[in-house]
Image 1 (cartoon, helix red, strand yellow):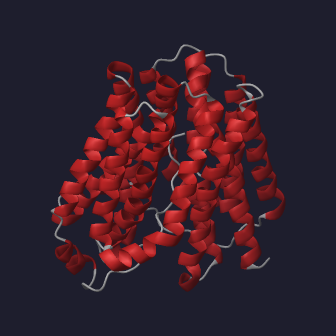
Image 2 (image 1 turned 135 degrees about the vertical axis):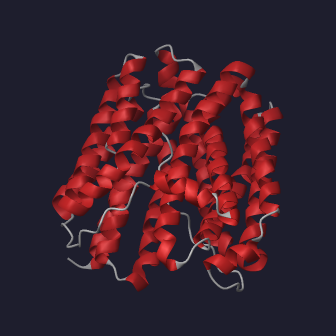
Image 3 (image 1 turned 90 degrees about the vertical axis):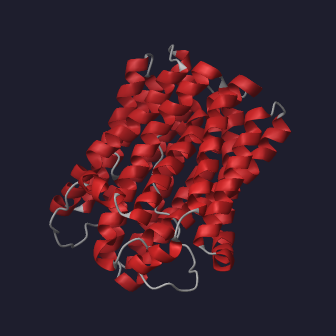
Amino acid sequence: MSNRRQLTIIFLIIFVNLIGFGIIIPILPFYAESVGGTPFQIGLLFASYSIAQILASPILGSWSDRIGRRPVLLFSLLGTVVSFVMLALANSLFLLFAARILDGLSGGNISTARAYISDVTEEKDRARAFGIIGAAFGLGFILGPALGGLLGQINSAAPAWGAAVLAFIALLLTYFLLPETRHRVQAARPAPWRDIPQLLRRPVLGQLLTIDFLYWASMAVYQTTFTLFAAVRFDFGITEVGYVLAFVGFIGVIVQGMLVGPIVHRLGEKRTLILGLLLAAGGLGAASFIYSVPLFVTALVPAAIGAALASPSLVALLSQAGGPEEQGQVQGVNSALESLGRTVGPIWGNGILGALGEGMAYLSAALTLLLLAFLTLRLDVARLRQRGGPASAPQEAPKPAPQAPGS
């Protein structure tokens, strides 16, 4: 089988699975509320997925090296199918938590897909090949919430059933069309958590990793409180939430696909990151005070543009934080802190929403992003470049490695 066909199948697997994942985002808070969940419990529900994924990802990665990529992909997709069926049938908060934890424990499909791409591509072609995951994520998060909104007009369980069907299609594509790859078993690296204290002590890298953690926690506040925010303030249902999230996702894809490169080339990574943080902070801060639907959607535009500029710029700066021999260590810690941020953010945001109101949840995220812009302004990028590589003209920021947010 040619590499192109294998990459096409991987794209379809991720795309179909991410549509199903996006379908769930608008409905999960409504589901939880219907069985008596409080805003704080809804935050824990979102966080449970990320916690389970943090625990399981190193194990699934080791399995994929020892027994192959294809078995781990099949296991992961089967877990996703079962979790969506459980979600559709759930009539208690306990079953909702069980469904999300199961999906998190088996959710190694993205990292395993990245390993598969490494197996079937040469190093010079790898960056372009990894771009298919970013494209699949972007398109999945545009179509998923929109499809969830449409299915939600049938009944509250229909989106979960739709997600289960799509995950099952991805499972069939993997089983029938995706061959195993030949790969070398590599020595297992220590868990990235053991590297965190050492890297945080490095002056500029430690600042960047702190910014990265707080950025993803703030984004998780925005993403995981969105449904409740819109329901409380504007009486949005599943359909309205799905359409607005699809609109926001479309903006992100356009910005990352067409604008990030030219802007970074002109401004550099540091100033692009500051611009993105300020736009996101301004959009979320304005949204926290708005009670008009058209103005609210308008405020989400700079928030979406800001996030689309900030994420790749932050990844680009982190990629300069170490030499070639320690890129794996730096990126492993980076991924671990992102996962931790997506665990803390839902608890923080939904806890504040329940205690102080929906406006304060968004305002707290906006103020944190504003603080991060100030911290980024103080970064000594020249010192960073000296450690990670020679100072040079700003390069085009790579697309961020995609990660499934806590659904």
